[in-house]
Structure formats: structure tokens, C-alpha cells
Image 1 (cartoon, one colour):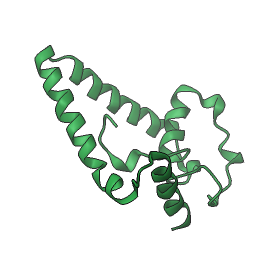
Image 2: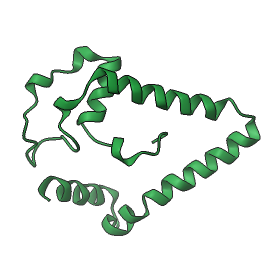
Image 3: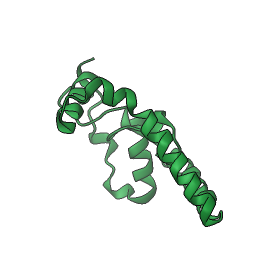
Image 4: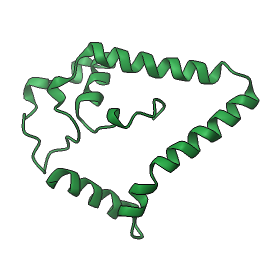
Amino acid sequence: EILEREDLLDHAARWEVAQLLVFRPDLVHVAEIASDASPSSAILGQDPSLATGREGEEVVAEALQRWSEFFSIDPAAQRENTLAFLKRRLKSYESYRDRYYQGSWEQALESWWRERKVG
């Protein structure tokens, strides 16, 4: 989220695995991951076997840099930046809300997930 890069948002896929390789490589067993993400798998995004610790380090470093810049400014600017960041992130979710939300966030998530796993 802090990087505001939609291409990095996934679940149990390349970018989550890359970051996990930085902090807990002992939990990553790429050889055991099925290469075809079936609709019943939890993988949502690029093939997790593509993940490398190096790209995980790069993403983490970029995020830490953004956090560092964010918190190194005066409190008034932090408040302004926080509000601007939240507005941008909420705006980025408008199309999701409009398309999937029909009274239940659980239902919205299930519909979104099903569309990506089947489509």
C-alpha cells in the first residue's frame, strides 16, 4: 500500500513470497508450489516460483524509504500527507466497491476472488 503500486498487490504469489524470502525464508518452499494455480488455490497473482530474495529486498527497501520520508517531515505535513495518501487509496478502491459491494464486504471479496480465479 505505501508504494501505491497495484502491480505489487497479490496473495501468496510472487511479491508476497519475495518479501517473505527477506524476513522468513525458512517458511518458503517454492518447490512445493503447484505451477498451475487452480481456482481452489490461494495464489492470486504471478507465479510465486518467480520470486527472488533480491526483488523482495528491493521492494522492502523502497517501502522503508517511503516510510522514512513520510515520518521525517514535520507533524503538520505528516497529517496532510496522511490524509492525501488515504484519499488516494480510497479513490483507488472505488471501482472495486462499485463493482462488487452489494451489502456485504464478505460477499464482495468472494465475488472478486471468484472472478480472478475463474476468469
